[in-house]
Length: 418
Image 1 (tube, rainbow, N blue to C red):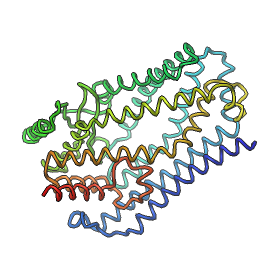
Image 2 (tube, rainbow, N blue to C red):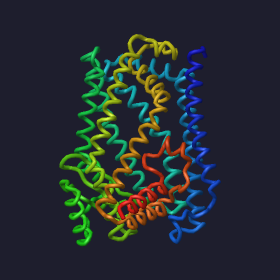
Image 3 (spheres, rainbow, N blue to C red):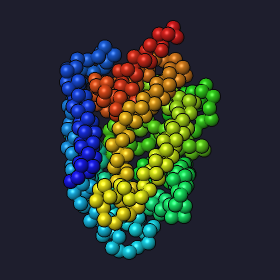
Image 4 (cartoon, helix red, strand yellow):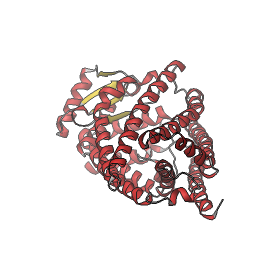
């Protein structure tokens, strides 16, 4: 292995080692906090439940560590010990045209990755989630979900590959701009149709049945001064006892979706507080702002990719005999994965700020800090959330503020209004 290749390998190892260290710090920080119940949770949970929360977090982390190590091993062997060169040469030996060669190159890699991930998915679902009382999914449903996901992913991935490669072939100098435009339009289209075409393949969505809750929702939406999208219940309980709510769709297809497990475990005001938070995302246009930020980053990344893929430097450095465009993409994605590590804290800070704004909007709409705090407490209990994450772990991985921070923020807002 020459010095340049060794340098890339060391950079990858350092990046992964840093992330493993942060995960270790998170567990250590959690254990040092012990089983003490935070003041905000007094009377809501006990030390036994805190201990169970920590055990769940520790087991998820250990499992993630092992699955990540396996993935890293496969990546290193494939990229640094000649397998990419062998695979790339095999695709080249088929003498297919540019577009079909690329489609085959990436689709086979996708299928291999899916096959390798199956044992980990099964263990996580039927061992870890079962052990902590979350999994309600039958094996038959898991298989059905996996097949549907594979078919859907194959279809969408094929559109991206075939369309992207056609644009690259059509405009060799400006493909980065055309590919960016194509992916942007495709992502908007998928977001638009997803609530009606994709999501119903996996779940059943029904209107809320509680008239009192529906009336409260209408008042919230009217107070927020926005056009009401649909607010639906999803049968999440057929897969898991985890609770959640989320925003989906854009334009006329936008909707708020509430897990049936959440509706069963919270009272009216707590549910309205969760809904007010999601309405806050609408009111503050967080989805549009996030799309704008990601699209700016995407076009920068595609232009840099275009510049870096000029000539055969990438494939030469990694000892690839056939300097295919597809091998260059694979290598570049690997390198961008290393270089993008510093962006993680920035992007997660951005999303955490959005969550705080939505929490503030919820407080302004509801004026009921106790119900919102209770909703956060129940979400933490229902999902066995880690109450004591390490600040560095939060910075690197948390898209939402830690739950204690959110509760204290809401209560502080309420005091300022009094």
